[in-house]
Amino acid sequence: MDINGKNALITGAAAGIGQATAFALADAGAHGIALADLDENGLADTARVIEQKGARAVVGRVDVTDADQQRAFFEEAEFELGGLDIVHNNAGTICGEPIWPETPLEKIGLVVSVNLIGVMYGTRLAVDALSRRGGGVIINTASTASLGPMPADPMYSATKTGVVNLVHASAGLAATHKIRVNAILPGMTQTQFIARTGDGTKPAEWLGPALAHATMLTTEQIAEGVMTLVQDDQSDGECLIVDNPPGVGEPPQTTRLKDPVEFYGYIAERAKALAGVN
Image 1 (cartoon, rainbow, N blue to C red):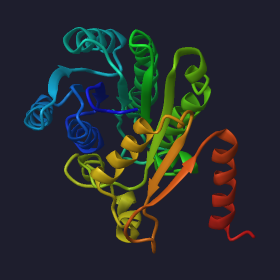
Image 2 (image 1 turned 60 degrees about the vertical axis):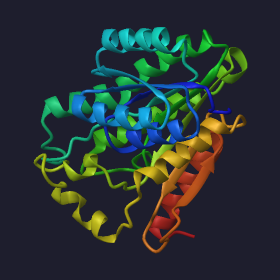
Image 3 (image 1 turned 90 degrees about the horizontal axis):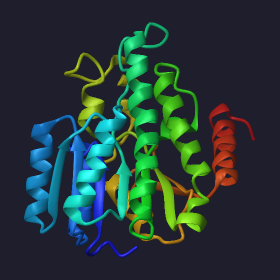
Image 4 (image 1 turned 60 degrees about the horizontal axis):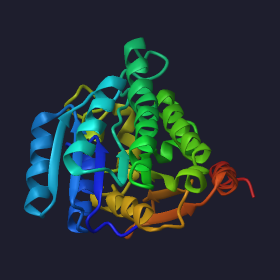
């Protein structure tokens, strides 16, 4: 897809990966970008920058767990921009502390609602919106946490695995609706998301060992991966991993897994390597 002149909608757009993707789309010539988040100050910052870059901004305070709020914002974005071509379902959260199995039920419910149900709502609404434009592309944010167990926060890992399965199940929409659906799987990325996983002001203690050995990815590096999936008309049902495991350094390691066979084959080989099995 040629992004020039196209319209996009991004959730979780007030900071981090969503904000970086909005900037990248504006730099590529997007006509308009609808920005959704709960952080109104962050949304205003994102909107100001993309407007400086020449794109039109439509801003909405949206709780992605509320189907009616998502529906209303999609309708507003279509009306204001004249239609949508790209949807990035990016909003997400993590349980943080206390870790499993002491995780409060309320946090479990929130993580499942934001990371999985919210993405399902956004994907379903995107199908209708993009169909009205004759097709388009949906990018859902998953995580490298979907590649294996995450003992401290299995809810996060489970929801991101669910996002991958949703993408795989939606691959056929390219043939029936001219809509491509892909997933971006970021590794450890330097965002407020990581910085506030503890008590809201610092990273969770259980992330300490990982942070000590990781070369953190930048949000711009993840946005570059999103742009690859948007622009490549052959990508459909694809998972693009952007990671920086210990010893890799710069640039980050990217892996494109084009279907479930490649995806689960990669997981199997990864599990063997982690276990030291040849």
